Amino acid sequence: MADGLAVVFQHTLAAPVSLEGRGLHSGRPVLMRVLPAEAEFGIRFRRTDLPGGPLIAAAAGNVVETVRCTVLEGEGGARVSTVEHLLSALRGLGVDNALIEVDGPEVPIADGSSALFCDLVQSAGLAAQAQPRRYQRLAKAVGVSNGQSCAVAIPADRFAVSVTLVNDHRHPALSDQFFELVVESAAYRQSVAAARTFGFLAEVEAMRARGLIQGASLENAVVLSDTEVLTPLRYPDELVRHKVLDLIGDLALLGPIHAHIIGIRTSHLLNNKLARAMADELVLV
Ligand SMILES: [Zn+2]
Image (cartoon, rainbow, N blue to C red; front, side, top):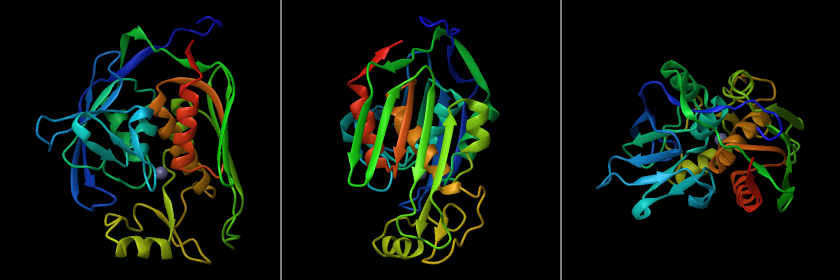
């Protein structure tokens, strides 16, 4: 606006939609409903299985765990996990306001990407609201690192994400991968939404033995052995595209932003560290 950009209005869903699936970790069935919400509501979750149906706002300050997925905590200590792919779809498609009801502790893993969440949003359609979307932009560049991983966010007049995945393990079936996306709904849907989460077979088996990822299968993740990619890929560089998807989801916790993010070896831990550093430097456009 100040720099001559056209006013973009806030959007919510035109109708409620629902999806049944399984939680990645518990493997238990979960019913998720995504409901329209008024302008300025933002994105919030409601745990319908807990007394009083506590609300959990999708905000960077509410992240309590980033080990395997992003976990949010809200009213009365209620938690919801594996939120990042759904939040990525909502940000990628330009949904500002929605109430997401889940009857358990996890968002369904779906197919390990955000494609089904995008289909859900697109089946409902979007409704424009009367209030303008309020973008925040960076007052100055910020950077974070964690071991060999690093990310910087620089001021920009749009939201763009550039990620490098480094083949540190010298996996014979992988190469270093780079992908860049200017975040806009058609490009998001086409270029990153279908990119699935990935894991190594040995790691997957160890986690299953510990009672984790009971809902994981070859249908909802790209699985790698020490020498091969065991799952047919949807994009030749599906892994780095999923890293882009995750980064968009983790930064969705800041609300609409204009910034260019450049990350190397990104992870949920690094993404959340960046979100927190950015939060201190964001100002309304
Ligand atoms: Zn992911």
